[in-house]
Image (cartoon, rainbow, N blue to C red):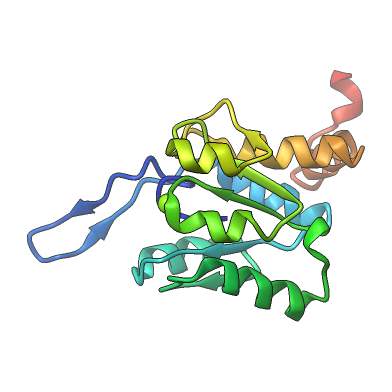
Amino acid sequence: MDVDGVLTDGRLGLSERGDEVKFFNAHDGVAVALARRAGLKTAFVTGETSTVAKARGDKLGVDKVVLGARRKGDVVESLLTELGLPAEAAAYVGDDLLDIPALERVGLAIAVADAVPEVRAAAHMVTRAAGGGAAVREAVERILKAQGVWRATVHAYIREHGGSPERWR
Ligand SMILES: [Mg+2]
């Protein structure tokens, strides 16, 4: 997935000192945890070189964070080679023009609701949520539901954190 405009609403906060601030959605953080628990590999592919994306990815345990990616299609291809996965086994979530080459190289191309028209046209699926509004949570839920493992994954996650999902349904 892309970072700015997908995991964030695309706005970039800059302090006088030049420090960058991005706002992430906690629901997407849980989505990454659920994806990992279900056996999906996750990666951030961003054109920016900001260390904020790296810090967020590391905190969430994202498998790979690629910064400064100007040719995202090439990055996605090498990630797939590295993981030994065919394009059909991969999904990519994007919002802007630089994401199109990456979207073209995966089996499931996903645009966030407020992606630019060209990206929405290149996608198989458009999320209901906008970037930064838990669009990645929605994408992960759709994928895990399609795989038939959503419920089991959520229950395992709740159990892992001390809950008893069998009691609520
Ligand atoms: Mg973006």
